[in-house]
Length: 274
Ligand SMILES: NC(=O)c1ccc[n+]([C@@H]2O[C@H](COP(=O)([O-])OP(=O)(O)OC[C@H]3O[C@@H](n4cnc5c(N)ncnc54)[C@H](O)[C@@H]3O)[C@@H](O)[C@H]2O)c1
Image 1 (cartoon, rainbow, N blue to C red):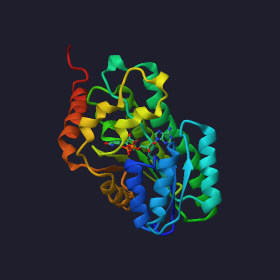
Image 2: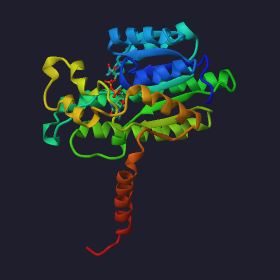
Image 3: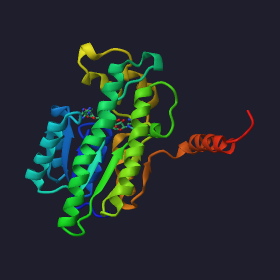
Image 4: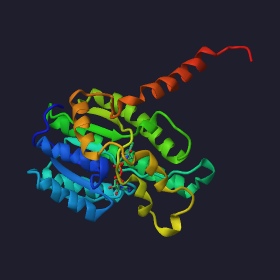
């Protein structure tokens, strides 16, 4: 997809950070945007900001952990715009801390949003894009699933987050293969450090759920990182080139090389005497 004018985009987690940065780049390119977020007040402010940029935008309170909520999002997008061209499957939360501090509640909180939520939204809207493209021959469609650099490299701490993001990479890679023949493009977005509200994910848990890990642990890694508004144009450029992975930081080469070298080394050592 290389022209975003009058395309309809759904952005989960669009009320803040990376989602809002993408939404603003979409607005600059002439797309209309459904801001889907659990934080309704922030979503309304984002939609207002986007309308101020000359495009149509609505806010829909959405909890990606709930089937009914996802169905309502879909209905709201349909009744307002009559179709969807782009899905940014981006809502996410973070909890850090050492492995021994990760409770089952922590695990569920992170996996429910970051992986199950991506699946729930992905299944619903990708199926729609596929049918729509058959109905309106050649309309196409595009999905961007937000994983992370942490979907390729875990660095200790935040085991639930690491598992969720590896899961998103796997889901998204498979989705790309499955939808290619249907004319729907899929990219996996793998941001490095972006200065967002992710370290405040804790606010989305009720007090009794606040157990082991803390989201603030992420702060030192992302404060001073790339600004969310700078990521939007990178993402749109990745879509135009139909890239399988959209990276944001080019200083990660050595870490990637080391990871894949370690994998290759273990393959080379198959059959080695112990
Ligand atoms: N900030 C980074 O450095 C970084 C790096 C790699 C990947 N990511 C990923 O980028 C995505 C966006 O995060 P961000 O950094 O912009 O953080 P953010 O906190 O600024 O934005 C995340 C948004 O998701 C929303 N959200 C959380 N739970 C939700 C739910 N259940 N249903 C719907 N919306 C929900 C939040 O209200 C928030 O508006 C996440 O998937 C995150 O894991 C972030």
